[in-house]
Every structure is written in C-alpha cells, then in structure tokens.
Length: 182
Image 1 (cartoon, rainbow, N blue to C red):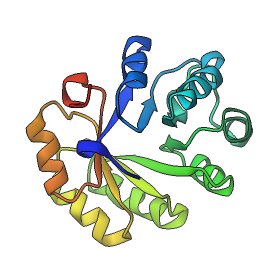
Image 2 (cartoon, rainbow, N blue to C red; image 1 turned 90 degrees about the vertical axis):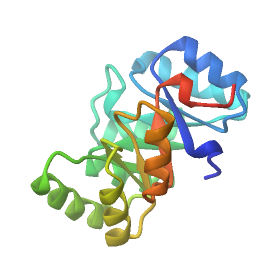
Image 3 (cartoon, rainbow, N blue to C red; image 1 turned 180 degrees about the vertical axis):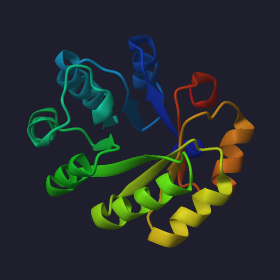
C-alpha cells in the first residue's frame, strides 16, 4: 500500500466520504455503513480511483458469517476487509482481498490471545487499538513480522507521529483534521 502522510482515512459520514472522493488519498476506510449502501458506495469510490476497505464488523445489517463475507468479496468487491474475527480474515484471504485483523489491546491476556489468532490467520496487516502504545506496536510487529496499523484514540498529529515512530506502518483515523490532504 502507498499511504500518504502515514494516514488511512476512515469515514462514518457521507459528507466525509464525499470529501475523500475529492481528495488525493488513494484509500478510504468505510465504517458504520448500511448493508444496503455498501455496494453502491464501493462502486462509486472506484469511479474516483479509490481503494476501499470495509470494516465488516461495523456494516449495519450484516452478520459477519462466511456467507456475508462471500457476498462482500464476490458482489461488493472491496480492496480490503477489516475485522476482529478470524473467520472473516480467513475468508477474505481465500478471495485474495487484503485482510486487516483488528485487535484490541485491553490487557496482557488479550494480547496473548490475539497473538495466537494472528499467527493462525496470517493477515496482511494488523490494526491495533488503541494506537497510542508505540512499545506494543513494535513488539507485535517483531513477533509476527506483519505490518501494524495503529488506530483508535488517535487525536493529534503528535499521536500520529508517535505511532509511526513506534513502528506503525500507518495510522487509521476518522479525525478529518489529521487527514492533511484536502
């Protein structure tokens, strides 16, 4: 992936989606979209030469079982899929769609369990939340040798810089003021 300014912009609103279509960002992450809108939004973004990542767990009205992911891969055809679920990551990889495994760093036990899942699923990228822990970004990357994306609670340019300097491949954020490429 060719990430501009280390930022992968994530949008929850149509206004921000339209803004991203006009931007020079190559990528768009769609969060909290309705299942009835997802196909047309991805097709529309492709007309603007945008590569869309869908957060499968946040698509309203979609159950993230194997059939739903098959629908996303075969009918919607996003550039990539983001999920916390191993079955979603495995199914996306089978369809040769970029798979980003999202994990929450709640405590040491959660980290250990997530590392086991990551080693089994072998996603293309890992997104860790919160993305404010540079030491763990580096530790996770070193253990599994998969690029890490930092997300969650990224509120300032300093947070972006710290995550990138801590070894993050990129940072996801829905804070439009951090996108820096209007």
